[in-house]
Picture 1 (spheres, helix red, strand yellow):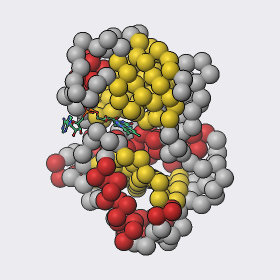
Picture 2 (cartoon, rainbow, N blue to C red):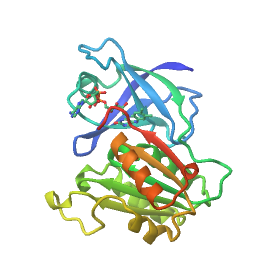
Picture 3 (spheres, rainbow, N blue to C red):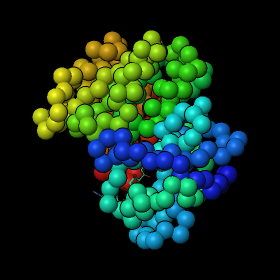
Picture 4 (cartoon, helix red, strand yellow):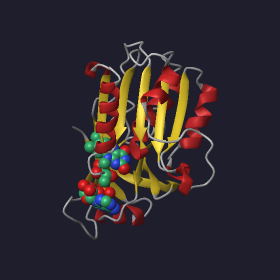
Length: 240
Ligand SMILES: Cc1cc2nc3c(=O)[nH]c(=O)nc-3n(C[C@H](O)[C@H](O)[C@H](O)COP(=O)(O)OP(=O)(O)OC[C@H]3O[C@@H](n4cnc5c(N)ncnc54)[C@H](O)[C@@H]3O)c2cc1C
C-alpha cells in the first residue's frame, strides 16, 4: 500500500474538544469516500504504549483539494503532539484502506447511523454523493451528547438544500447540559428510524462510531428485524 510524507496545512477546532487537520493531498492520491488512512508522527517528542500511528477516516470528499481528518482531542501522546505540530511539518500517511463505502451499484436507500466522531466517513460520503448528484436516497442519523459536540453539524444541515435525496436527523443524548436544542433527543431508536424511513427493512444500514455505540445500534436493528446482511459497520477502536 502506498506511503507518503505529507505536510500539515492547517488545523481548526470544529466542535468541543474536536479538531480537524488538513493535510496536503499527494498527487494522484485516489480514494473512495468512507476510506481511511494511517497517520504516523515522524520523530515525535513523546510517545506512549499505543505508538505513533493512528487510523483516521478521511473526512473530506475525494474532490477536495486537501485531505481532512477530524478527531476528539484526548490527552494522549499522539494527540498532544498533533495539536502542537507546526504547520508545514511532515506526517507519514499510508492508505487508503477499507471498504466502508457506498456501493456504486445498489439503488437501495442508505441509512447512516453516526455516533459522535463516527460522522467522519458519512461527511465524506454525503458531500461526494451531493457533488456527483447521486439519485440514491440517503438518511443520516447523527447522535451526540450536546450540539456543541457535533462536528460538521451546520454543514450537514446546509447540504440538505443542495441534495433533495438526503435527509438529516440529529439527536442529542444529553442536551440538558447544553445550549438550546429543540430537535430530537435520546439515542437513535427504532421509532426515530421508522419516522424518517417508513419501513425499516428498505435501506442498507451503515454504522460508525465507538465500538459500544456500534454494538448497541446493531442490537437495536436486529431487534427491529433488520437482516445482518443489510448492516455495514466501522468501529472506531480506541474509543469506548
Ligand atoms: C477504521 C477506523 C477508523 C477510525 N476513524 C477515526 C476518525 O475518523 N476519527 C477519530 O478520532 N478516530 C478514528 N478512529 C480511532 C483512532 O484510530 C484512535 O484510536 C482514536 O482517535 C483514539 O486515539 P487516542 O490517541 O485518543 O487514544 P489511544 O492512545 O489510542 O487510546 C488507547 C486507549 O486508551 C484509552 N484512553 C485514552 N485516552 C482516554 C481518555 N481521555 N478517556 C478515556 N479513555 C482514554 C482508550 O480506552 C483506548 O482504548 C478510527 C479507528 C478505526 C479502526
